[in-house]
Length: 548
Image (tube, rainbow, N blue to C red; front, side):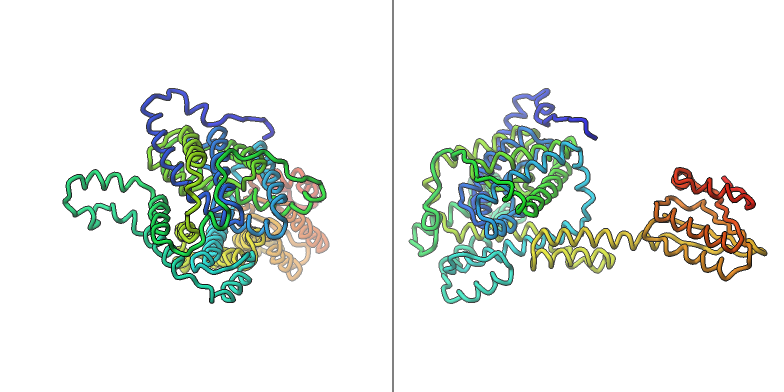
């Protein structure tokens, strides 16, 4: 477990790399780089940061994760899942402490990968993942209502109900132009993929070059079309809406400066919870994204430990350049695969493309309406949530419903940290309850002083109360009983189960009887042998021997 293995997937992918694969990676990387442009800005703004924080996170983290990661096609960068987390940390602790928490989370992620604990993320129940993902999607949507409606709100609170109160209090500042732009953006993003579908009305138009135009249109990302066309429309009509220029003064046209945030151990102690939250969410999102990439691409499976180490390095480095937490991004990764990517080279091209666009065209972003970016985020929130799972809840067990709905509500009402903590504890409690119900004690019958029982399942701390059935039978039965436990179907015994058997043995001895265990399997036999319980039974051999 402690053996150190650090081998980026890029090294293996370059073996036998040829011109055709490079051209496919080049096209895919350029496509994803363009897709990432509006998303990176939107995620940063929604998180309470400047747009350049999201852009340079996408560039630096995207490059580092591609260089060092354990997946062939995963694209790293800022993710929608972090919006509510980052906004909450900013409000409570400030920007400098957000940067420290992000770097500390990077160290934690690297250690998790170093200790080869990446596979443990798979043990998080899917009901919890769906619950907090849908909860985050709701919070993202609510956070964008301000820009959708064009409300004049100086600063939005992080709390869900406080946000609703602020929105209601400022409803009188409604801006019809911003509402129209955002609504057009959302509707356009939903309609864009269907325009190029085989059965769409556009495909039935028989114009010269229509087929070629359809092929090009199907490849152009919807968010870029929305960003360019609606920004141009806003400038042309001189719409009175808030833009990147009016709120942030534009995007600096240059490389970000390296800066060290003020650091002290006293501050770090206050940031333990935010650090764990960022690391946990980053690990879950990254490895879920990598699994989706494996399924969509059909390429070699990712290395979860290498991926965590790469995510760790990226999150340690990015804050020194004013960035935000980064992880694997499902939407951009799927776009990368569908565009033809097969190696991490596409991820590097994505980062380079984005850097070139930022450095060359930063002044053009001055006129981008915030309502358009809000529309892109609303569309992202819709796609992020697995809303059909709510309609399918009646197909699942009560345990699944409790975990999913509980995690969802806690994420919305409180925060992700509370939701995941309560969700995991609840999942463990429900699992223990379920497993304890599978352990059974069956009374076979009584022949004179001999009482026979069969044990089924796992005798662990959650099931020891069922041994009381045997205790009660001994106390109510004949004196000097011979109690036979048929353990053929007993698969496991833990220390609590061992203690329950010892207590049973004491009750039997007080009644002047003996205990016999028949047909012990290897696992429970080893536990009882190491604890000396089998020797204790042998020591009271005025009683029958312990059978094999």
